[in-house]
Length: 273
Ligand code: ADP
Ligand code: MG
Figure 1 (cartoon, protein in one colour):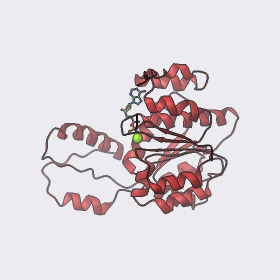
Figure 2 (cartoon, protein in one colour; figure 1 turned 30 degrees about the vertical axis):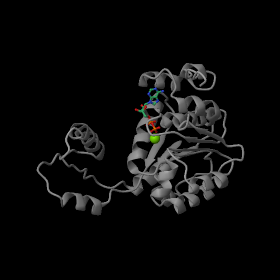
Figure 3 (tube, helix red, strand yellow; figure 1 turned 90 degrees about the vertical axis):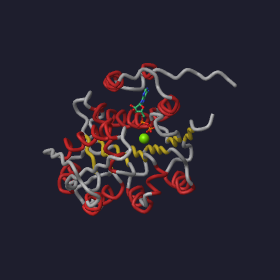
């Protein structure tokens, strides 16, 4: 067995990533890249299309957020304006997590704008959950505060086997999303269904998008978004960088890679040793 090369430090990428991104990573407390980050970042920062397969928890989020942010910085430095990057996640929860990490990075920049485009909370699902019996209600003023409280609650009740809980919050406003998209927000983190809804309106100008990220691609298909995803991709500019991340690769995903990514796409798999 060959000796494993020690993973690169983020600092070693210093000619390829901006100072503000480096200081954001430093604030997160990370010095060395994870395996998948060391493999993906040099290629993705080079502008290559990338398919990365790596198990959950391996650090895929930064592997696509860092190149996405650098794409935006480059466009802004060329005085361009508009939406440059779209990141698609299969669920509201994953999109929200990604959006949170994105905020951690772009809070180190003054000029980068972003928005979260996710579908509404299902009243039916909430109703079914509430029908199972309740002893305690916690009321928060906003969706965000309620979600934060709920997250801490999960940290506690994950130590119990029997306590159940649910989050009852209002829906995402299409109007608010539409207004944000109309400003030409630089990065959009989205779930497929709602993103496609907005692409069919004239408020959202996606003609400048040159970076597309598909996170948890297999799940996007498993959750039935194949048609939405195809429609989205067919409308986006062809001249773009596409990065696809997944824990596994199904046949459907392989087919998408063939049809939607460049021929010289770089495939990276850290699942097998
Ligand atoms: P994945 O998407 O592959 O499941 P995440 O991107 O969610 O993984 O990252 C998993 C965890 O690892 C997160 O808590 C994240 O903050 C942490 N992490 C990411 N990159 C690094 C790094 N270079 N060093 C240490 N921890 C990291
Ligand atoms: Mg992930």
